[in-house]
Amino acid sequence: MNEMPEISIVETKNIIRAVKLKYDINLSIFSINILRFKIDSFILNNRIKYSDNLISKILEDKNFFRRFFNEMYKYDLELFRDTDKWKLLRSLCFPDLLKNFSSLKILIPGCSEINELFSMLIFLKEGGYIDKCELEISWYSGLYEGENDAALMKTNLTEIGIENFKRIFPGVELETYFDINQNPNTFDSSLLANHKNINHNYLFSDLDQKYHLILFRNKLINYTAHYQDQILVNLSKCLLKNGIIVFGHRENPFETINNLDIYTCMDEPDRIFKKQKYFE
Amino acid sequence: MSRTEFLKSKNILNKAIFIGGSAGSFKVVNKILTDLPANYPFPVVICMHRLRNIRSGFVSTLAINCQLKIKEAIDKEKISPSTVFIAPANYHLMINHGFHFSLSIEPPINHSRPSIDIMMETAAEVYREKAVGILLSGANTDGAKGMEKINENEGITIVQDPKKSDIPTMPESCLRLFEPTKVADVDSIIKFILELSHKN
Image (cartoon, rainbow over all chains, first blue to last red; front, side):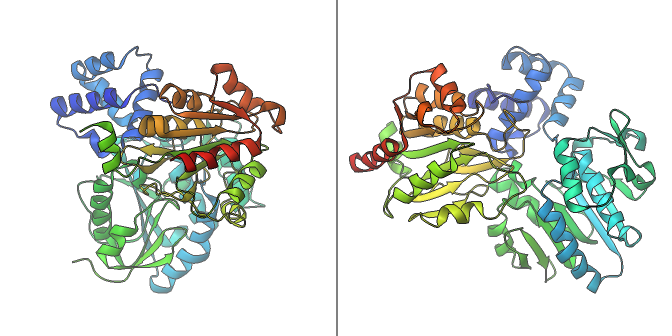
């Protein structure tokens, strides 16, 4: 999408209302302008003329609604978005974690873009961490649920993603990890074996407290303040003591983090927090 | 409740300034911020096209001569008076009802993230006639539609004179869409926004 959303806030609220009434799903958890973006993009991509037509289709066709719902969580994230963050993971987070733990369980909750997975797998491999780490990914709203690894292997590398890769790994060839001659580009399938897909909805539930590192970057921003708090509580329950949680560098978890009173801040500009106490 | 009572209850009888720019606009923004006094009452929100991966240095450079508090906006932050907010690199910056920011990583618009259009269109919806949009030099058309929205909602729109802009594309694209409140050089823009605060 490269146009400003045309759909109004009133139309967005009508859609929220319709979805709630028919499917008992609450889209008002999303920050309204972000939801507008998503809905508008969906309308354009599916050649729907008016928001009223969208509402009718949503109400009449459950499969169509499921497609619509999945799209609300999808992002086009470039490979290694925010290279400074990845450098900090390498220089600050992993050394700290490996001081306390001999092996690491890493969680990326609500992954909605394949490049997030690729970035982490490449990072672990290049850092020599791959044999020490178990990576678990939950895909939001069943995205990729039931898909085999072949479906996960494909992406379209963007110029920005390639630039990011070179910035973090100068001297490493992109072809080490991607077959760039194919279109779409294909990721190294052997590396995909180093992750596990799990079923987890971070909005409404937590997991066992077993993770050493949680990467939750640029997902809080999608939600209203109230749901941000709820998510932070759920994720805090999954994190081990001395575990680290990482947010996007312009996100704003501070109030809830401070209220939970179980974290110290490792890096404020980059929103990196270490859990110092057990969650009660 | 009347609109005035509503605005008063939310402490936004004041205007808010929304500045967009790209290539050739940094020095203009710098000059504007240098000339705003420490007690300038309105929030100033600036969206400039920036390199995605360069985070540090941008705000600190602008802060050198700026008497107002200046910072990068963060998600859900309140838009407070007498403060300059800069759209962070690689995020869209939106203005929400409730007078706070929200950020997004939706795809670039007009190849731009942050997008000036997004900032100004959402500002137009929230601030309506209290929005002041200023569009500066730049090499693409980002911002033109946003300014048009501010104009449609009876806000004030100021476009840098294309003849005085380093790169006239951005101002010209705006002028093709509608007639703004003012077309001006930098000094006149500064004079205008200072006078706004005196009138307020």
